[in-house]
Image (cartoon, rainbow, N blue to C red; front, side, top):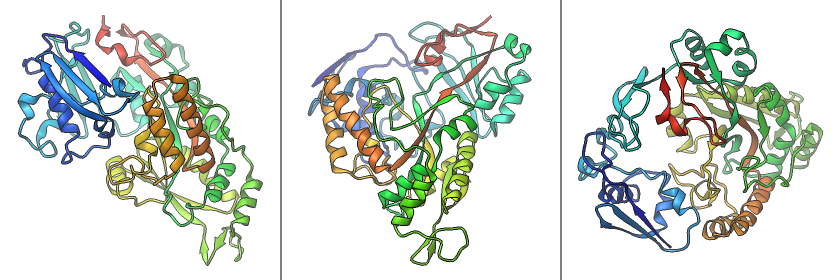
Length: 437
């Protein structure tokens, strides 16, 4: 019910001002402020009171037991009180000119081109090994790869095709190092559950039978991934391997749709009902070639059962602000990166359906609500596991999403970058220890 943080002394913001417990309290008060839009308030609204004990001691007191409390503080935006106090966070230029505490400090941002970070020589865990990071904005993955092979980039994420087929030659092996590890993420086909057709669970289940997930993994990921069956990734403790599966079975999909009143009355190859063809548009975002390819394969498979799916690819910020936030979509293909703690209250709880909140498909299930609450209040891992296993069973039955696949992370770096030590969590956790000879 109480967490007391003892802050390291002598840590300084990038402008040289010392970091103190007042900055933690200021960041906490900012994220729970009703005037500050954030989809991530919920974890901090569990706190009954925060207090500064002294300059280097901060305490959070909870209303109820909260299992993911400690991990939630790892993502809190601690903010420099001396720079932001009295300012409107939604209007000030801090997001374009940030001042932080980390190993690299902001230098400049040229929109549409690059962000430049320089070494923080005063970093509290020691002087970083790399003097400067330039993060380039490149329009597509193919161009990035050409830039990488030309030596203009040192680090990028490969597509499965690039990893499997385009990075085999010996010169690549000599000049570069590539890595592969499971990502904490998954890709899904999500329904707008307020849509008149997709309110019907049986229709959603028919779609699940019509999609060949292994085909997506083989064709889109070149085999570098796993079938997703729920919102947790395989080989983690909350993952339930025994939920209902939807094997590829187009005939069963057709049968379900027929039972729900869909038939091709006019012979045009598209099912119809009450005078309307079963035609809808799936939205996905630019810059993710795998999702576009997956959408194209799903489009073909749905066509085989008499459903016409159009695909629209939209620039990311427009996609989120104009379509997701405003619920102007019929279906989407998106993905989630998930944390190490299994609490997904913000994504699945029935009250989290407002604008800018994360349950944008409008999923509502009373039992899931109760289980989400139970899972976040229990500290016994076995009790939590029971709750999350049952949630996955309900999601597999209700199918607000069709969970498609869990991709592999496929970074590649120039061999001149040293100090990389792969771990199950990835490679960038010790980025401050990387160096160039």
